[in-house]
Image (cartoon, rainbow, N blue to C red; front, top):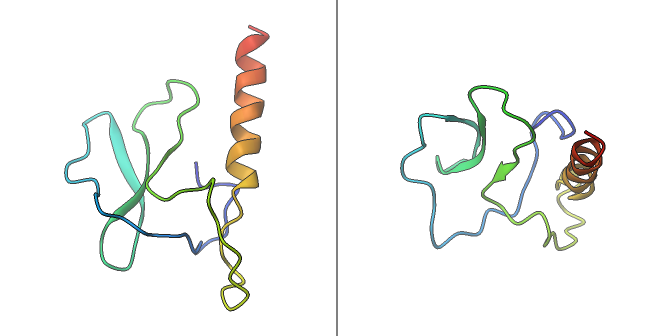
Length: 88
């Protein structure tokens, strides 16, 4: 999940709800500074899964935060996985 992202990505962590308990089939792989889980991935490889708590479709420009994660890598991975699935 996090392979296409920078080592310490900056995301738009704006929540009124957050993950409280993670299902046994998932594991947390990214956290906000306040401890909120920002991303999960499956414990076992069961195909393509992207579980993010931030909004990759809404990334306002922030010149003062050059490490702000661009959504493109996540969407590109989704399109590639969908294409691979369609070819099966």
